[in-house]
Image 1: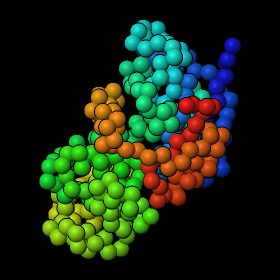
Image 2 (image 1 turned 90 degrees about the vertical axis):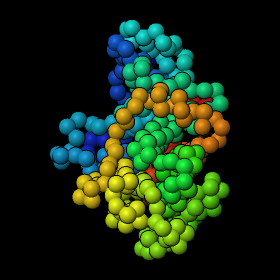
Image 3 (image 1 turned 45 degrees about the vertical axis):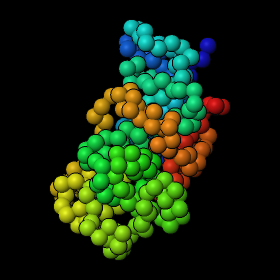
Image 4 (image 1 turned 60 degrees about the horizontal axis):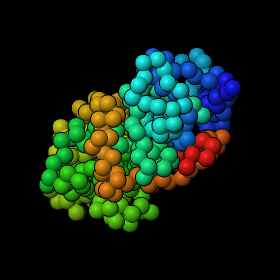
Length: 310
């Protein structure tokens, strides 16, 4: 009988070298919870920021901290009172500490994984899709809007751009030149980020833009406000200085994940929303995965695989 699991953890803040894959006690689901045997787990910028201690108030974690926010896998144990799921059900969702072989999650937060999605593809969806969906709702994007998305080739930026297009907006996306052809193939008008951005955007949108999503967090709020004519329709998911500029920031989910994916899964199946996989790494190579994530300039998501998930 299996009594242990493996989990990525760190006992001090620092570079990816502080990460380790540790044996931990196999978690048991409580009332209303299920345990999922993880097949794949997404890698997100938050993972690296937390590991470096950017959200910490102390010099080191009080106890080893876990890594990961999203997963796909198979239900392998049910807590008391759970009737909506069965052992063997393929699912995906959000969960702290999901860079592991097993994770315990609330049963009402699970999304059933359709057969047309692999575990790797499903693990790339929760954070990017939920965050993008929330941001586009907050911006109230509508037909005819001109929307500027910073970091349009990354996970959240890419989904947000596609959702804005689906609403009938025109989308301009900042990215490195290596991703311009790819963005253009999706109907996103690419512009190079960095100095001179305002002039480049005005070249193709002389009247400025109607709404801006900052998915980069790299000091783009002033130019965003300039282009949008004010902070009212500028939203950031990545810049902690938002209040200084009177810009709205959104940090956490405001709708249940199953509700979000009632809308989004059909768009993913139709190909209206695509989340390409930039790279996959086995769980034991999580340090390399986070190092790649921190390098930036990615197209889509990095995913950790656990065992042979697909």
